[in-house]
Image: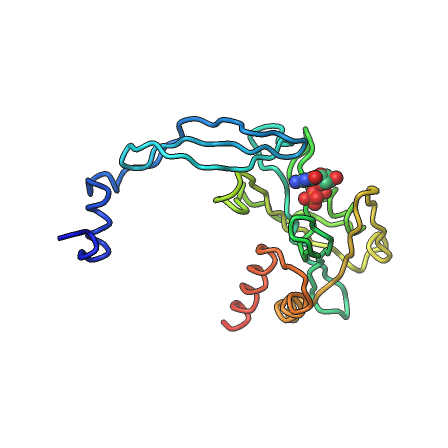
Length: 220
Ligand SMILES: Nc1nc(=O)[nH]c2c1ncn2[C@H]1C[C@H](O)[C@@H](COP(=O)(O)OP(=O)(O)O)O1
C-alpha cells in the first residue's frame, strides 16, 4: 500500500521511518548570517528534527539586542479615571512593511542596560505622554516565531487619569516618529478595532487577541 492509502496518523509514522523518533526533540545545530543591515539580519539556521535529520530554516534577527533578554517591550496601558470607563491606550503609526497604518499598544526596543519595566515606563511616556505604574511583566514571548527570533516582554501599566501629570499628556517623539494616540473604553475595544480594520488600518495581533479575550471574559 502506498502512503496515500494510509490513514493520516499512520502515514505520519511511516514517513518518519520510526514512530519512536516522533517522541524525540528538535535541536539547534548552527546559525549562519546571510545578510546584515543596520536593524536586521537574515540568518540560515541548521537544526535537527526529532528523527535526527538536519534541516534548514531562514530567520530574521534584530541587530539591536544587547544580551540574552527580549528585544522589546509591549505595554498594555490601562487608564482609570473617575467618572469614566476603564480604557486602553493605543497608538497608530505608519508601518512601512505593511504599507498601512498599524494599530498597536505602545512598544519599543529595550535600550542597553535598561530593564523591561524601565523601558515600558519610558516608551509609554515618549509615545503617549502618559505616566504609568508597572503592574506585571511577562517572560519573553514570541511575536512571529516562524519568521523571527524576536521576543518581547509584555508589561501591564496602570495609569491614573486623575493625577495632574496625566491631565494633559505630551508626547516626546523623535523626528522619525509620527504617532497618534487614542483611548478606547474596554467594552468598545473589539468593535473599535474592527472599525479600524474596515477602514484599512492593520491591527497588531497582540492587540486583537487582547480584545477577543476581553469579550470572552465579559461573557463569563
Ligand atoms: N526593522 C526596522 N527597520 C528600520 O529601518 N528601522 C527600525 C526597525 N526597527 C526599529 N527601527 C528603528 C525605528 C526607530 O528609530 C528606532 C527605535 O524604534 P522603537 O520606538 O524602539 O521601536 P518601534 O516602536 O518598534 O519602532 O528603531
